[in-house]
Amino acid sequence: MRASDKVYESLRADIVEWRLAPGTVLAEVEQSERLGVSRTPVREALGRLVADGLAVAQRGRGTVVSEVSEDHVEDLFVLRVALECASARQAAGSAQRASFDELAQRFEAAALEIEIPGSRESYYQLVQLLDDSIDEAANNKYLSNALRTLRVHLQRIRRMAKDNPQRLKASAGEHAAIARAIASGNPEVAAAATTVHLHQSFTHIMAHAAGSERQ
Image (cartoon, rainbow, N blue to C red; front, side, top):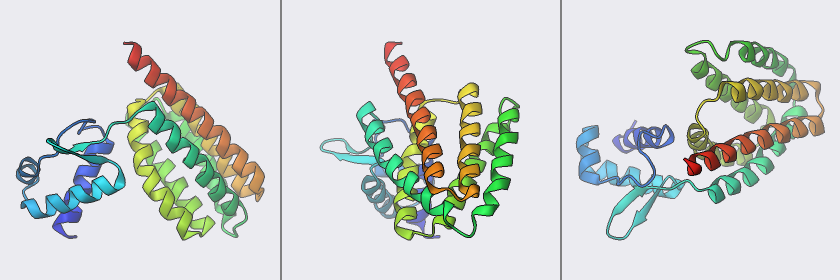
């Protein structure tokens, strides 16, 4: 892996996980010293982060981590509904759909274990597996490429809303319903289950954002 790729992956992870908060200045010299590389790969990585929308170039400040506003969240979810429902429909028509029964069972089990210490990271990995499985079953590279970029921002927003055990438990049930619908081979039911999950996720995130502003 090239040095610029390593820097990009490291900075992207720090931004998504909120170790680098919105408004943080990403100074080339500071980041090159922190990551043990020259300024050139840092400069290249910062350019990619700006292109991704995770950072912005500001006159007089340099490159800074981009803000996350309610309007930003709403716009992302409008796109997310369109893309993920289309992907779920295509996955439900795939010959690979039978494998989603096992994923549904795993989500149903995860719902019962979500409050066990250390289980949440495993849960997020299971969510990633479902996303990857839907992408593979849908077999549409344009959809998967668009979703891959979108999900980076969604991971960042999810961390903003914190980990609420009750919401995670409900989310596991919603993911199980999506997997079951895909396994059944019914595109419209799969899209409907996806819509329900995305609506609940959006409502939870916006409620958390409103609560944070009142504090």
